[in-house]
Length: 238
Image 1 (cartoon, rainbow, N blue to C red):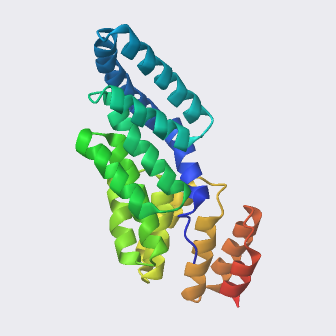
Image 2 (image 1 turned 90 degrees about the vertical axis):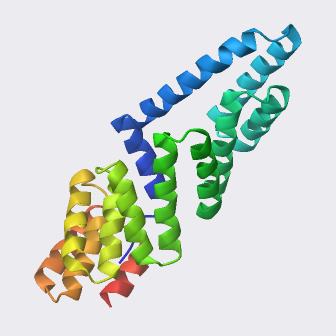
C-alpha cells in the first residue's frame, strides 16, 4: 500500500483549503490581529513607528518570495522593538513551523504550531496544522494505529479533507481493517477523482482479499490516473 503523507499531499491540502475557505478563516484571524497592532503602532514615537512599518513590509515581501528565514528574522526584530506586537507573536511560530515542514521535521512543526495554539486557543489554522503534522509523523514512523487516531482528529475538524480520508484508508488497510479502509478510500476518490493513490490502495485491498477482477480494475484506474512509481507498483504486484 502507499500513503500520501508527502509534499504532494501537503500541496494538495493547501490548495483545497483555500478553495474551501480555510484561507479566509486564517485571513480573518490576521485581520483582527492587525487591527489590534495598528492602534498601538500609531501611538508609538515616529522612529519606532517607521521601523515597525519597514519590518512589516520586509516580512510580507519575504513571505511572498517564500523566503521563510528572512521573514522569521524580520518578525523577531519587530518583536524586539515592540514586545507586545501580536503580529510577530503569531507569525514567529508559523515561520518556525514552515521551516520545519520544509525539512520534513513534523515533530518540530507540531511544537511550533502548539506555541501558536497557546497564543490563540481557538485558532482553526493551528488545530488543523497540528493534526496534519501528526498524520505525517505517524506515517513516517509506520505507526498506523496512531495515524488512524490523528486522521480522526483531522476529520473531526474537516470531514472533506482528501489527505485525511486517503491516509486513514491506507492506515486501516495496513491494519487489515478492510471495511473501514474501503469506506475512506472510496470517499477519497470522490473528493479528488484524479489523484491515483486511493485507487492504488483499493487495488491492494482487493488483491489481499483475493478478488483478482476488482484488483485488476483498480490497477488500470491507478495507471489511468497517472501513477508514476512503477517500481513500487511492480513490488506490490509481485
